[in-house]
Image 1: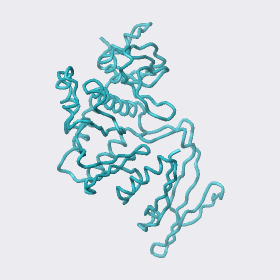
Image 2: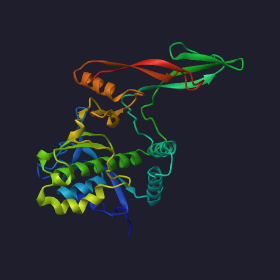
Image 3: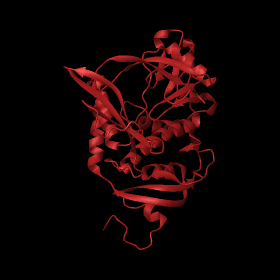
Length: 348
């Protein structure tokens, strides 16, 4: 019997509960009947929120939808579009091997970074925003100005002499094609990112289900990490006694050292007299009385102290501009010479 549909008329159930050898990406509407459940992660007004209902069609994969229907009795009210794919068992083996190698304790940080780049490259479009980047720069290294040089579209950034030969970094403004055909499948990117969203939502929903709501608060989360604040000395002390069996059933799936599981990276207690602040995505700072325990995350900034990071975040929350002087490579194509660049941040 074929895995694919052979009927002229396909019902919702044929798609949602079809062959396990198939998966899909769909634009789907629906809701969870219990209004206290918020298993959806949706982008609204440029901010990510947790929600009970889609209100409109949203992109959803079969894995995510199956979890919603199993754990929250999610009701599909409309399927706008659906793209069906046959599952590939080889890709799963390859990705699992790469992720496990990256998580190995016996490799260096450089090797870990290499594995991360390979994994990201396989999905092809991480960080790509087609609406934002209508043009792009084509960069070439030449030893003379080409005949088709046009000052409207070309400009020379810098030049260097290497063994008496002058090399020029030439940049040309290119218009991105609307179709922008890429060498990597968009479907694979969607499946990977939606699985990450599902996993993060699983963690959020787990805390909602087993902890007293007045004993925990989610301070920060971004893709594959979260910072949880407890009013108790441990997670177990914040448990609702009626939910202990559910906690014991699910904790080994969510907590551990395997890829996709939550593992504790740092911990602060009331004795540390810690202060936390975050001003934007990929930014947070935690200060303690013992400065050796300070923790910070500042994407795009190097060699700044935790105190500087903390003070800058406070200013941004107060709508003030923050200016940093950062050392950057002058020209990555020609040399390793460093220059000082001014980087400004402001939280609007």
